[in-house]
Image (tube, rainbow, N blue to C red; front, side, top):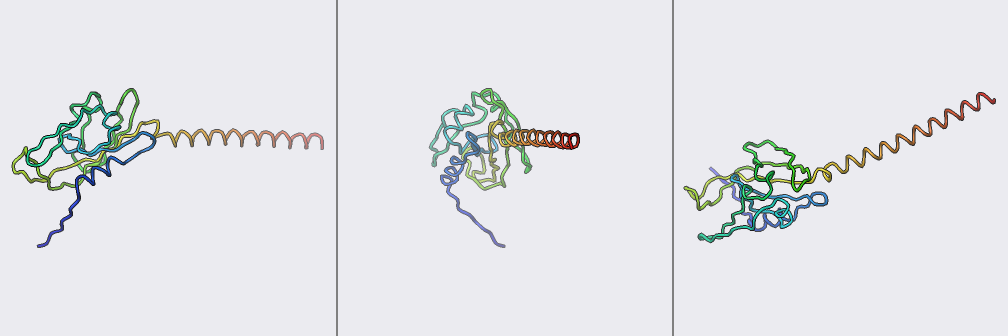
Length: 171
C-alpha cells in the first residue's frame, strides 16, 4: 500500500482565493459544506453581507463566518452543491442579478474540533460570483457590434443595388 500526501498551507490557499478577480467586481470564495466561509476578500464579504469573522482559539485558531448569517436574503438561501456537478444559480444581490457558479471539491482530511472524530473528510466548495451584466457584457457588446456591422452591410448592398439600377436605366 502507498499514499501520497500534499501539504498546502491554508493561509496560502486563502490568499489565492482572496486575489481572484472576475470581471470588474466579481470574486471567489471558499466554503465548507456547512456554509462556513473560510476564504473571501473584504469586498466580496461586503457584497455578500457577511458578518465579521468570529475567531476562536481552541488549540488552533478557527474562523467562523457562515452564509446563513448574511444580511442578504439571497445569500442566506444559497445551497452549496451536494454532488460533484457544477451548480449555477442566479441570485439578486443588492438589487443586481448575479451569476453564482459553485463546484464541490474532492474531500480533504481536516481537523474539526466540533466533531468526533476530530480528523475526518470534509467537502469544501469553491464559489464564483459575478454580476450578470459583467458576465454577459462581452456577449452584449458582440451583439451590438454585429448589429452595427449588419446595418452597414445592408446599407452598402442597398447603395450598390441603386447604383446598378441607375447604370442599367441610364446605360
